[in-house]
Image (cartoon, rainbow, N blue to C red):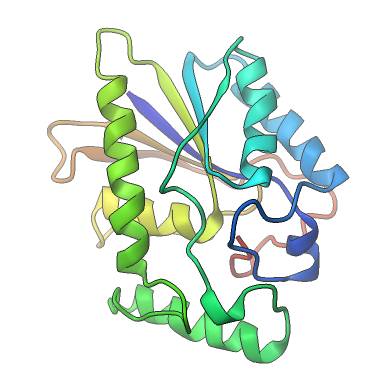
Length: 215
């Protein structure tokens, strides 16, 4: 099986650089809808067997055209929503951004138990996200597993992918509709290998490119 971890398209919260992590959250902007349509075209020729999305509206809106291109329904799954920022929710001020960035950087320094104020740690995120991936993988463990798409969120995807590949693997920021493609490999230490880490379709107005995750 190939697993495509796909970040949702642009939202109003992304434009405002607002921390938005509690479902259902902010919907896609017009640009976000265009990004979703564009990534659906990119994946139209892939042998997609199933499309999953988090509980967030933006994830389901991004997943919808991908699923439609293959005659599939979007399956909403628990556990793959964005990491909760707790007391920082809904904020875009400099103090909130600094508080988030400090914890976020600590995770990449190896302190996975460092917790956002009133929110989750990287360990908490992985404890719910990775079992969801395992359940999905088991459902598609067959002679023709094809490609499975899971639409999730920037920080969640990066933290989960790092765990699936082994924490020594280099990871990068995931912009709106960016893809992280993993292949199941029984010979790999973690059972997964990285096939692609891209920036997704580039469309005007992607203000989040190169920045920290806003969900």
